[in-house]
Length: 112
Length: 115
Image 1 (spheres, each protein chain N blue to C red):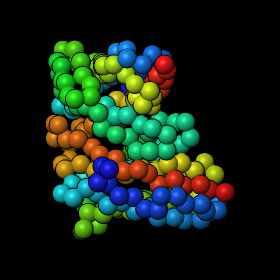
Image 2 (cartoon, chains in turn cyan, red):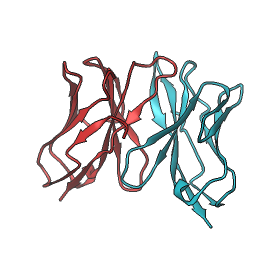
Image 3 (cartoon, one colour):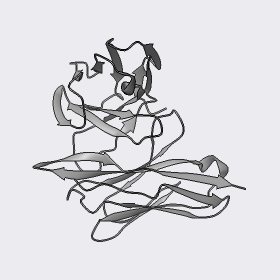
């Protein structure tokens, strides 16, 4: 079963744009791609969701290429409070169904 | 606040014991999911229920079981506990099963410590 992988960690300065990529080369055909933010000892918090091309909301953008084998979460002008772990969630085919699988997570550290 | 409620928030128990974690999904949500997160580890899918029926199974041990009741709340039962079962257990819920655009919302977790 192919893993859903992300960079282990990223560092950024406050005010910069941060792009986090998730590789999911075995994504289920009909499943969406969802990104979550998690602070220590808290539940994952929904950020954004998409199927293909580009999706934007008030906090982030999500870029998905045509082959859907990866996705990139873009956080514009990060602040210290964006320091957290970010996970992608995708459906991975398992026989006739699919299993929702989290990526390995990316720890983002934002500093002044 | 996601609307998903989990109890207890913290639990300490001894090896060999059995515990039950409870989850109330968001109002109107029919699907419930359980995930395990060990210290500094990722989120491992355990099991999913939809409207009372088991829909998908992940890396759930035979010592663990779950069910979803007619009022849609769910319970995760962990038995013969081992030290390695110490983890955060998250419940999540969504409106539907696996249709496109079905967003999953997570509770704040139940922190289990086995001593």
